[in-house]
Length: 474
Ligand code: P61
Image: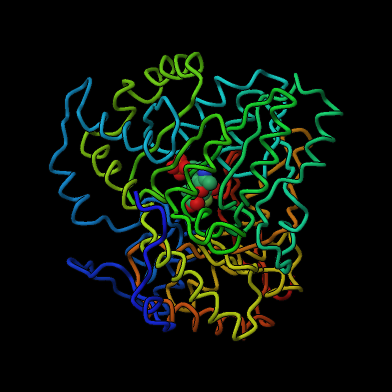
């Protein structure tokens, strides 16, 4: 493991330029349908980008989850799948990769991140307990609630302000956490639910100083910390670039130090780890591991495959090693920053600072005339698709869902539309197309009206909800 980051050619020679540390060996054609066909596809999809067919999408920034390109080494790993029901050699490779790079003692494989969230929530939360964390994530909070827990957001206030330039907007507000402990008692708190590169805040990182301080407080109170490590590699990049004392440390070393302050982690391997499917859950406590290992066989599969094929585990083990390479992370986050810079040059309202995996457009800045319960971010996602076949995702009131107690919409401070960039998939030219499309939608903002929801699923409603435009006369 290299302990100091590798320099790009540009950095070695004192130049500005940088480039991807790979070249393209295989391509997948994409195509674009006409404006009339897009309008029809959008209507058929109920103005919900989750319900579009991918064949109708030109540049797909719905998610960076499971959409990244695998390397030739990962594809070679696919051919090395050991599909034994029990004890596949690929499992041991994966276990070793998690232990080496994340430092936890015990690992349970799962089919994807929410499988791991389910197992952890059912095992570590007693009904009635609270689960504080640095902003909710949809599936994470739902599994905590299904286990009888109540999630409490204790992220710093800056995270809720798209214009705040705080460099670590993922940080935990320790005073808010102390306040919760005083109010409900540490014995009524299951664990701290910490996320790296906080997705719903705009891909915002947590600083090393913050996790160290959190560890101290949780030690005083006897609380474990479990980490959502889904985009921890990207979080480590921001620590390396922005936190004093880390510029000479490798991403791999930073990830490992960060994890050392936590008691375990769950992972959607579909993000940082460059695979199309997979996940894991890793802990240091043997009793907890035992309980998780007993539960995984009920919901996911045997404890040496957890819902993945042997070949999936091999691609994932190799993906972990590739994910922590400095030159990879620099170019991955660099592409996101490139798109962000184009938009900032045109004064398009986006969440700043630009985060690790996505650009988040501030839908309130686009459509101040559309009330939140007419779904400004959902409207923005629909408009961008209509303009140019670019697909993004609502991350506002629809995603926030309803309060289980009152049944009312939750009204989040952030009303965002996310454009998540898959890893190693699109080029700089694609980013230019996306930027121009956003500019066109921004320029037409005053003529745009909101939506009404005409079908609403009970849980995780954003995936399948359907909408209709509200006509100007209403
Ligand atoms: C995404 F619209 N994320 O960002 P699984 N933790 C974190 C995630 O980002 C995450 C999971 C756990 C997705 C897919 C997705 O509301 C949505 O492997 C920080 O997807 O089960 C997933 O991991 C869950 C999109 C999930 C959504 C939920 O695009």
